[in-house]
Length: 230
Image: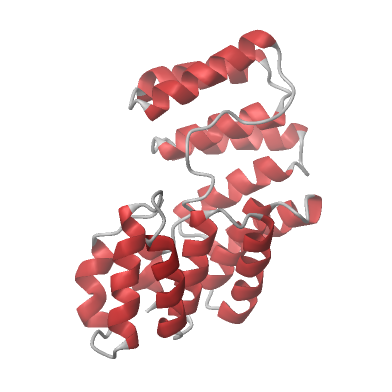
């Protein structure tokens, strides 16, 4: 069931194209704002060009490098994203933002054990980083360690209570642990929010069907294959 449910485990939080935080000069900040606007408008090529320009201007800025890598990952340029992260981590081996980005890359590659190591390092560097805790929780879920994962999900949600992505992943963790009714409650609360993406409603439908005992794994397959990782 773990493999089949992987598409539902999405890192919605932290996936939007927003300029990374951190010190930068005026020109770099302008490039990042243009990049974020271009990405939001679907101009991926322009966005990546601006992110690359900003990263080239500030090779020692970990936040800018992490933002460039995240944009590459969102665009599906996994190999280039990994190269950017490897170079940046050589300069900043304990930077939480870079480690979170590296962990997400490994989740995309299906290497949950490697991702867990990256997220653990990120949490050690920044214990109150909600993205690091949330990523660690997802990796634990994919490794079947749902009890540990739940604690990390809830800790991340306590730090970022408005995060739909983190709350969604908590619901998925409960569903994976066989607690479908509890998962449905989480998804129902999220689905009522104006900003909730359609994926949340789909997760709610899966959880309700599982809670009623009317949908085993074979019956869930059509819904699962329609959902892609974030």
